Amino acid sequence: MFEVLSRREVILQEAARLFREKGYLAANLRELASRAGIQGGSIYHHFSSKQEILFQVMDDTMSDMITQLTACLEGAETPSQRLRRMMRFHIEYVVAGSDRTYITDDELRNLEPANYREVVAKRDRYQRIIEDILAAGRDREGWCVTDTKLITRAVIKICAGVATWFRTEGELTLDGIAEAYADLVCNGLLPR
Image (cartoon, rainbow, N blue to C red; front, side):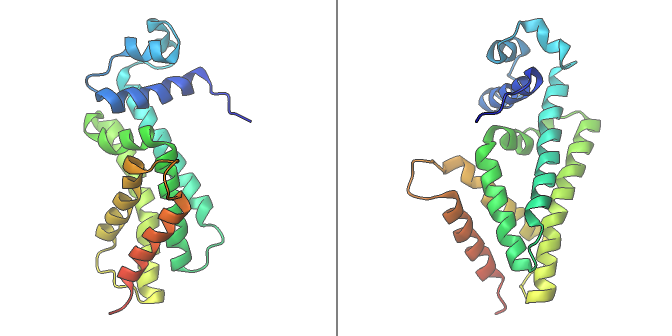
């Protein structure tokens, strides 16, 4: 069974792809309309500007990541379980939505100040979930975590990096990668 996307969602999906391929500044709305299968001016029935489209891609992505990660962590009792679930979720999410997550990470500099603040606030909320996992691991399981913000950034980057090289037809599975990465991080956090 497949999901039928609204016209607005098709535009956002194609925008993420176009912005990733050409960069936000080089992309134009005429090409975006063509890719979305609509007339050039029809984009303005859905969005007021290219900036609004960029913001919406990023804002939707961060909101979705927060919601899905929160749900994914339900029922995980230990920091180790929570970290493993978080890493598996993040890897699967960035691979499945690589255009959107790439744009959300790479195009922040092109957001207008108010939009930038909104997206960064959501990114910070997402990161705080991971920081809390790391702090709980330090407090409850003795992990060697001196700087939760720094380690959070490292964990996010190693997970996000999978989207640049993973191939579904390759030898590795997403579950296998997530487990190996979680082992690497957890073993690196063990008391000396």
